[in-house]
Image (cartoon, rainbow, N blue to C red):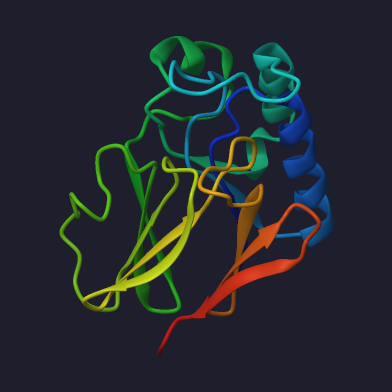
Length: 182
């Protein structure tokens, strides 16, 4: 299975269009969005081409391609305009025999770990900072932010395929990779 993973669009139509274009180019089976889709939040500057209504239209057109979890900037009012579910705090995936706990990161994160065992993966966005870290046998992954990267990171997304996670910039250049062990 091939997945594309992105986080923290924050209402940027420009970066949402980039995500769509990358999705079409990469040709994964699904796009997993790790929250903060429409609103920029009070701590962030407005992202480039802030246009939540445009993001709504674009994502609704892709609704059959999407898997989503709720971010701290996502609310019930957002769910009212989106035609796909976004209100789950986490999602469990099983890939290559590994449990992947996918969440936004504001509730469950490396400081507040969910109940995971060695070999499991904690996957979240929220910090806008790319990460690939071994936390005592649990692997922590963060694709960074599509629209508002922090700490000198590039705008980025992640691809999962054949047991390998890759963080890429929006030009498709590899930044980091991790191959899960069997």
